[in-house]
Image (cartoon, rainbow, N blue to C red):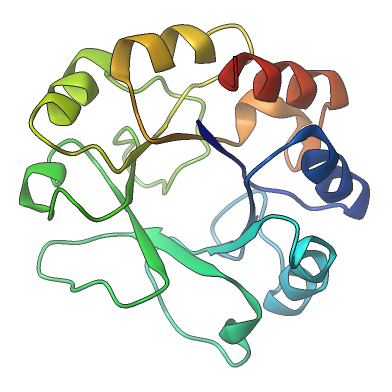
Length: 189
């Protein structure tokens, strides 16, 4: 099970996520997010993880900035008609997933009006599992995951990976070490 710890804002949290076994670490640069970093700060934090975990820069709607090559992947909210490029992983809602190529990796997150993710809203696990049954096996599940429910979500949905932000936080952008440890341990059982 692949685990991404997202919305990291501090060096100590990046280091701990890697130490605990996170496969990927995410840095939000979407200006409307309460966890937003400047692109420069995101790149500083990503350097800590280079060669140890996949580094992901997270946008709402994708736009380019100089230096994007400092990350392994770009994550953004996909809109119909957009074509993903190499090193990009779109975040899809249930409405958009059926329009996606099943073999390509993507993040499935719940729809929350006016927000791009990190809301703590629980995804629809039944609908997500139906997507997996239809061949969307490269799905990473996001939305409302916590140390207490991630094992049940994995058992129910059978995703390729899980993605968490608020479920491992003490407050916006500040990770709780015990919640990160418990989340990763539960996801990788």
